[in-house]
Length: 424
Image (cartoon, rainbow, N blue to C red; front, top):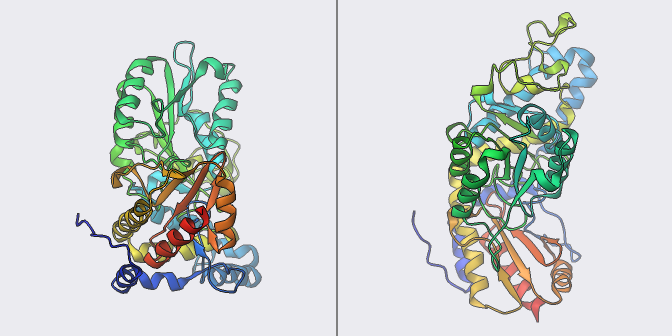
């Protein structure tokens, strides 16, 4: 990998943008406007991606089909709704490093997490614990605790939390491995965010999966902050399942339908319990409306209901752009952009802030999490007034992400200048 020699002057950012082969993709997204009417510096794709300019046309196309065809739109040869999700599933499989049969686009993240735990969290008296990271996204914590209670156990004794060492913000790989080795015999499920939402740390998913399986644990990942952000190879790494949303780096729109991965070794595990619904039933006999459930082999067998076609349309728009750009090129630019932001912030080091995201490129994605001391929320409010959109996480974290699909080096340069001014 070529290392970029960063420079502090603005003309460096201008030059980098001038030779960026992905720069033109920026023009295909809608940027919010600031109070003065100019484009905001939007560094919040880790929370909600920008709208593709073609999203409206994809939605309008579905609405026209509905108007023209009514119920027959499900089977229209030109683009049947009954298989609308499958194209998105194939594109998603490409992004997560999976076979198409291992991936399905359905529901939303926490719903999918519950569906996966219904099948894969099977606690016993001897093995009933769930391992998560301390500081996991709250919805994951709520879901996990509710599943423990549902099975008649107590989160006080059945929930194990990975905790950083004193004075550190991120977990060390060796500490994760050590905990799994030590507690693994009592752990039924390891469920971690592939990328921690608060710190931006990328976990060693391959190593965690191997360690968990060695101890007989089921392994799953929440990839809300991973898909479209960092390279993934789920099939090869071998976790049992993974879930994600599509509205962050994949720009599918607020509340967009999520996605789910189930490894192929479970494709025909008919003995696994699951919450069934008609859209997971064998396609060849689905419309015979029989009383007995016969699941589709693979991830689609976990579907419950038919898909919301209008809600999927913006994701189609974004996926087309995303796959045209290519994950390899996007990742290379992401490493460069994030490194540039870190470099500029390091030029003006101050006791008022620190970066808690790992420094190593392989241990982070596009996001940098900045810890602000003292009146941190006031700094965040000031920079927001200046037309910078990031987000604040209590008690002291300012999260920003330079998304390679639509952010520029000049975005990063201007953000750092406004951030440092807001610190004064």
